[in-house]
Image (cartoon, rainbow, N blue to C red; front, side, top):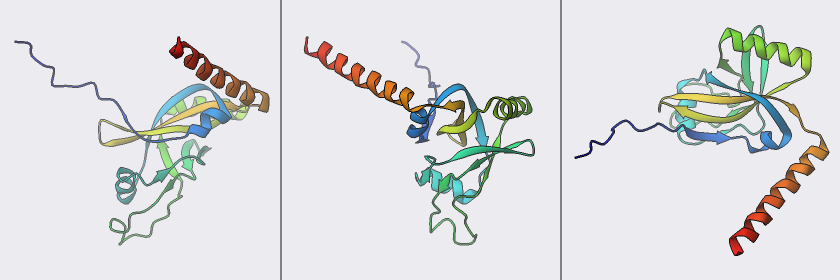
Length: 160
């Protein structure tokens, strides 16, 4: 009898994805960062009440903060505290990663943008942030043309 492996490869469960970021920026590096949250924020995230489409990362005093990440408070979970849905949330990164990010942002004009948010090991909220530069209009048009061509090519191959 074959023994089944009880430990499954835990795939990170995606909470939110910033689709616009991959269209607006070309990412050179990606980092995984923890997120410092309050209790009501975790409950709201579990309920899916989060939007990271307009959020960005700012470096201040050697620390990284996620700005304009909108977490809508649940009425039942946040009755005893005053909730600020768009407060800056601290990102948990290593000192080496923070120094690298700060150097590239200051010297070479990179931007730091959140790409996705997901659960790690079922309990920790992680944010995938990308270090990249903004695309020009012609680069965006090239991406659209390439995507349309890939769709058309798949359609033709399917019919053969």
